[in-house]
Length: 110
Image (cartoon, rainbow, N blue to C red; front, side, top):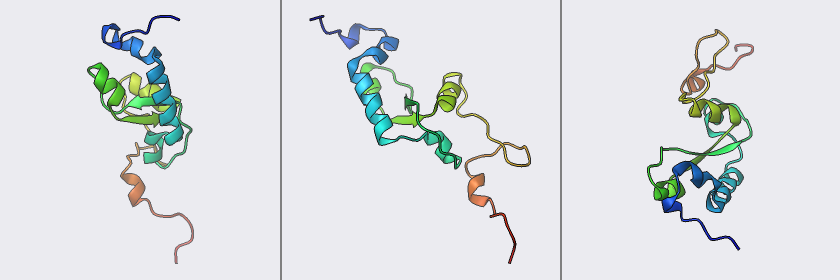
């Protein structure tokens, strides 16, 4: 049986390969199966990745810090440094989460 790796002597990128992380990430996706960022915009996309809400600085914050579920599009955007893909309204202007609260229903007016 191979020796157990000590996470405190590993490089932070190697932490993602640990059994503890794989278990925690799978649990996050099970608990939150839809992308949190897309839900803010009224979209439903299946989650692809468990993501740290805040940047972790040590193994403790890596293993205990809050997670969120993200779809591939939002996960890739966050890794590129963009907080979320830009979503646009029917007028072509960027849509913000708060705009969803002010949208009026479409259809015949009474």
